[in-house]
Image (cartoon, helix red, strand yellow):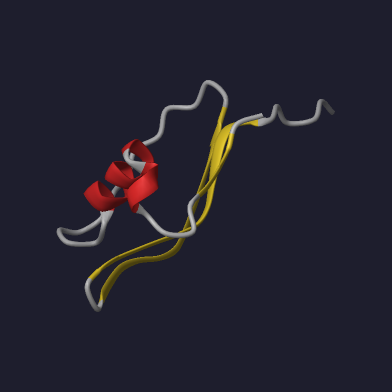
Length: 68
């Protein structure tokens, strides 16, 4: 059995808040190389905030992106 390829990137422990309201609390995502990923969820669950944090990493708290 071949070992799994390293992930394209990992996000671990992503936290984001707006004032006192926590909108992301320790969110994790691991994307394998060559994968197609979609985020699904109800309105107001943080999908867009999560993607914006990936785009503007400096505005989020405790974001760890790992690129092998």
